[in-house]
Amino acid sequence: MQKCNRCSKEAKVFLAYGPHSFCKMHFLEFFEKRVRKTINKFRLVKPGERIAVGVSGGKDSITTLHLLKKIFPKGTEIHAVCIDEGIKGYRDKALKIAEQHFEELDVDYTILKMKKELGFSMAEIAKKLNERKHLQGTQGTCSYCGVFRRKMLNDFAFKEKFDKLATGHNLDDEVQTILMNVLQNDLAKFSRLGPIAAGESKLFVPRIKPLYETPEKEIIAFSQYNGWKVYNAECCPFSRQAKRNAFRKAMDEIEGKYPNVKYSAISFYQGIKPFLKDFGKESKIRACKSCGMPSSGFECASCIQLKKLSN
Ligand code: SF4
Ligand code: ZN
Image 1 (cartoon, rainbow, N blue to C red):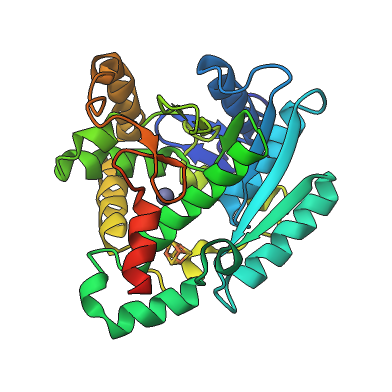
Image 2: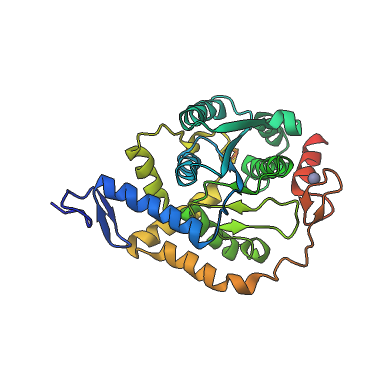
């Protein structure tokens, strides 16, 4: 029997990058401590701030919400915000689960409907893209969905005067994005990564990632050990994340052979981040001519995409 590193109980969780072996209780403690450390190290939350948390009902955002609520029991307002893309049999189920967590945690929440806010549901957009294949691009529905969701979350947080917008992005998401930006030669996007993304413009509400240093597999274990009901994000019928999935697979294979490479990747990124601050500055942030929200061009990505769909 392999023992826990912290007590004499049998170890249940083995983390090759440490290496660490933990019993259930000490794994939960280790996990929470690391999230607290991430928040403190990168100064993600300041006392008294109002935080909007983007919640999808999946394991990452549910874990983020529970931990923020636990770490900041008072003095910091935590408000959940969900996007209902209008995908029947998917988001409606996820939102039901999310609402159970809001009740349990006594958290106020807002559900924004894509159809109401932007005029289209994702089901309608998927149908349009199917009919007009040239509008699909490489990521199809997901690239539209991602742009619209980001806009809706930022617009909400800005209008409701939240200080930060927290998301459930984890270590694996971040490493995949670093690698994708490098291999797609996208220096502007690459320069904006990290645990806190604050645009030059006041129109951007800074986005924070409390799970920035937390591996995805551990979030699955953490939510299971806590007995939380979460929704599996892979069930979306329009998922076209083929490219991201390829990067995920590659990183998992390398991490399996050489534990710790994911942490090395974000440490490397932190090391070069100070030298990246001028990249992308030439694309000055201004108010979009159609919706007034932040944009690097005269019109924001969301308004451009909405026009394409309306024509
Ligand atoms: Fe949107 Fe794609 Fe996620 Fe489905 S899988 S919710 S279409 S981003
Ligand atoms: Zn716009």
